Image (cartoon, rainbow, N blue to C red; front, top):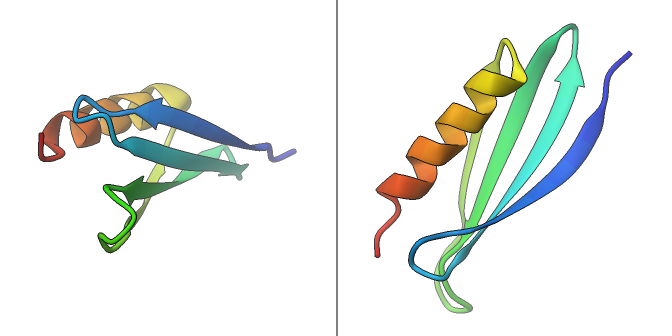
Length: 68
């Protein structure tokens, strides 16, 4: 059975990172939607992970690499 849910992260630069996690076949497909500002384009990245730990680690790295 797959699960889906939203996660919201506040980035170090006070921007917001919205993450949608969709579990299927024991894999997690994670969509990062980074809203850097009202007039800035959205950076949307999709990746798949084997477990939630990998997804959390990737999100942490992604947040750290965002411009400050």
